[in-house]
Image (cartoon, rainbow over all chains, first blue to last red; front, side, top):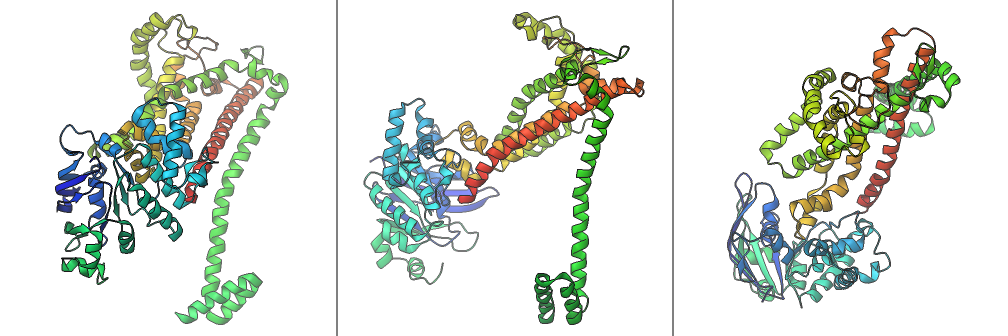
Length: 260
Length: 343
């Protein structure tokens, strides 16, 4: 299955030798939603950013270990990072559409990068399909030429989802996609996630445990023992098991709200 | 803490009724503190107002004086001054076209050469340079701005002009000589040499300000492109350049302003020949150069008035371009700001 991801002893550090995550080995099943939860600073965003080689774009940042996608280690020499990012899309915490680009161009931006010259009809078709998948089409279909920055925060985030979908990735990584949004927009994005998992593998980092419980099939709990210690994957498994009968004491403490 | 706060509150309330009343009440209740604060405030306001007003006065005085002293020339030659190429101090007939031409063309040529170079520098320094190289290289580029223009002029005369004369110009004439602007012969000293030195002189300005504008583009905007699989150059094109555009336009205008007004280096290199020649290699003249070279020999009278009118025209060209650029920046800038404000 193309959307299957597996990490093997994945570690990552920032410049100055600050270790952010250490030895994470998990299997992320295809066409499911996997949530990564844990207190602030536990390295869950770093883990996510290692899955499509975004982490290394921070000056001084390094990753080691393996991430296997579609049977290949994305960190193997000869793997092209831009190709990895095309196949494993990302949605960020703060909505970041290209503010001056039109809504239409925002959605087709990745498409135009990847495949050079494509017909207008093809672009229009992809734009419509992606916006519909992201549940934004009805709100913007009459103003596709307006700049992306003119939308509300929740709409911007769905535009970013549509933009990530347009290049037809196997996997979509979401880094706290709702933390800057109001409850109504959050609801819309969660509905979208639910629809998307039929065709995509989704990994979502969230600090909201209710959200993890609502949207995900699998959950990983990450924790760093102390401030400055690298984060580890404490427990990983089916969401209902993690939330009802976790095996580890730390997981239980976190889920029952004893810390974090 | 409590009484002091009440005093301030009283003073604030007093502001609404009348200044005087509040002062009296302030003194009556809590001693001099609110009074001193108000007094300090008014002194400060007056000082900054004065500072801002000084600029307006200076500008107005300068324009007034230029207009007053060039009035004889303006009255005698009218708009014809702008299109006549006659500059005859013996018969007192004046026209400024060759100077205006030299100033405008040398500055635009300088921009043409400097903008690609400066943007290249800015993109490299802000996006690609490794950290250890970033600040030494940036400082080096900035230092170009610290070289006195007379030094540029000397270097131009002894190094650049002979080089252009012997290598660059013959090459261009040989291969592009069919186009009038590249027609021979090679001169060395001339419009082209002046433009090249101007280009070098304005590069630090344009590159430094563009670099700042590019550094201000946030990481999430770049990541938006990178996460779609954009290569480094595609990231620059997709997210850095569009958002830095207002800053880049501003940088170019500042550079242009500097080129238009540059006197010393241009006077030393442009050749100071009053002619209109389609070839960019030919010697020419500029507004700043004619003022600098002729001013010493002029006494009162029509010649002086004509020179001062040249100065007025230079000021006018600079102001006009500045205004134009400002409108341009405002248009693109306000659009970006409006959109940023929403998110």
